[in-house]
Length: 349
Image 1: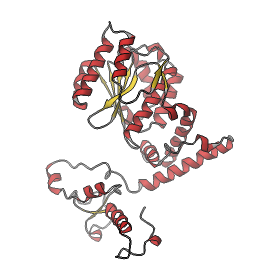
Image 2: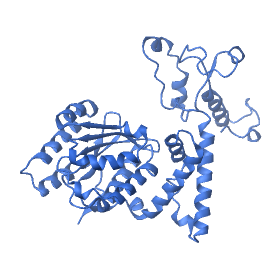
Image 3: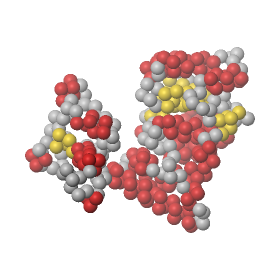
Image 4: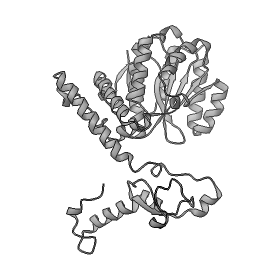
């Protein structure tokens, strides 16, 4: 929002320079001359002549963004399809709606805690329950604020139930689930290996949640995460726990709503179809479209386009060692440790 009018004496020489700069940035970032496009009547809701060709955009958050918005690129756009930067591709009105979603979610959370006579402040995660999360909830619910509040509160409940692992980001390592780098677009990439799983899904899911949470923190408030799920060596009986599948889907659909950019499933077997059928029922059509099912050979080529040479070599070596009949659990664990991005998130039992 703009600086309070009461706190600004004028925009002339008597106004502090910093305040004038803030006010100028606020005005300029909401209104911009038609420099990015010649589209006439694109979503016009008012008289074109009355506004003298002005185009409204989302507020810039930094001076660099403001500078980018001010650059005229008509000649460039005339030669290729129009691409709008992410910070311009947002509705100015969604900030107000997101603020309302955040307020109502907090109010509902504290109301429930009072009813249960629980000290709400001790359980409330202010770092997670922020405006960015509210915007993700709105996006996940296609702008439906009421459903966004319901999802937000459910996410708070789940984070409270798993407060220890979310705060410590530590858990027991029961399989190979790790962050192993960033793709060329900067998304953290999480690798999951089915062959390494020797425990039920209900025991493994904490490791999945911890790894996903750490990847989200790397991605930033509105960033997304890519997944590589290597299904070679899957043991279906360890994952046919419908209660655990439902609980996992519930977490992914609330706490981690709109956090996935891509899920690549490698060597998807017929034995895994029952698991996929259960999971698919809980996914929105948009999320389903983020899944890609590839063979190992296809995945090697595919990741050659998404990863730099070092990360591509790492994923190819990982595929090879996991498919080597002679590789031992210790050798695979050593490889996983050596190719983990950042500090390990789990300890060995």
